[in-house]
Length: 364
Image 1 (cartoon, rainbow, N blue to C red):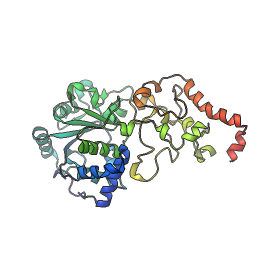
Image 2 (cartoon, rainbow, N blue to C red):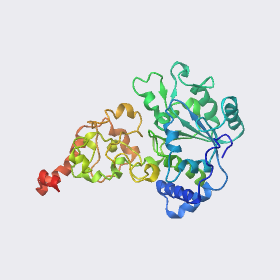
Image 3 (cartoon, rainbow, N blue to C red):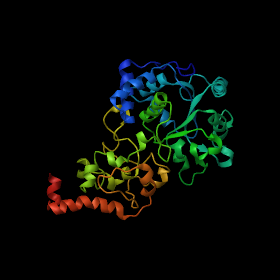
Image 4 (cartoon, helix red, strand yellow):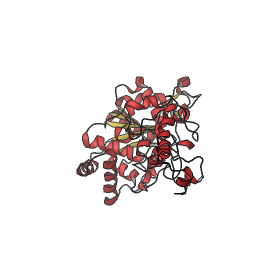
């Protein structure tokens, strides 16, 4: 671990946790068991890439979700895999020493840049300053010299809540500033916060295969954002059969029925939340009764609200279709209103054809 990182943290992860983390990443990447030794070899090679982690307009939630991850301790695993040369939240250095560490890495070493938080551009970026410099100035200095840029969290990928209408500071995501990032490849890992497994998977893929993972049209890794939540959700069967919770706390909600009518945005959201769950504890928001709010999608604070009402203008492909983000994502929000109603009606029609009264089914 770089000496700039807080030395009060245990710098090593036990072997069992290390292997468990690599196995989780292999599963998230869709790799076979045969590839796990290659991930382990890459993660334990000792050739740790240097990383600069910049914070701009954000709540530090992405870092906190990483630091507090457990089962296994992904923060320690990541810190075993990389050399974290600059990170304002966890580094021991401060003031001039911290800035010196930043400049030394930028000027003298190859590094990966991770950006957390939006970049305000209004009024020349005066709404976010660090060490007397704006986020625009810092990004313009650091980004062009990076070997790759990872934007972590929805704030860094598309502006997040800071960019919600009316966006008073002109907040944007990293990829919206090509004049500052140049030709450096960018990977977006959206989420509010994103699952730490997606960051670790991207880094380990890069170390193992010496290239970035395949991306969709929004620069999101396909292994994490290539399928809709709706297609992977354990409540999908209830949707197909027309069984919905009508309001939070009703008997249908308690029976685990689909949450679409109470605002779940799973049909419009691409992420691996149902399969790569936080902390490996077997639950995620939808499984415990809260609908997806679409936090991995661009401008979700505007396009997905109100969070507890269903979106009327959404078209969902027919039952059983696994959608591709590049082909379907552009037409989901703002499509014809009849799509969802028609798809939901499939299940209702099945029930009527069977001649099973709703009251009888409810009792069952």
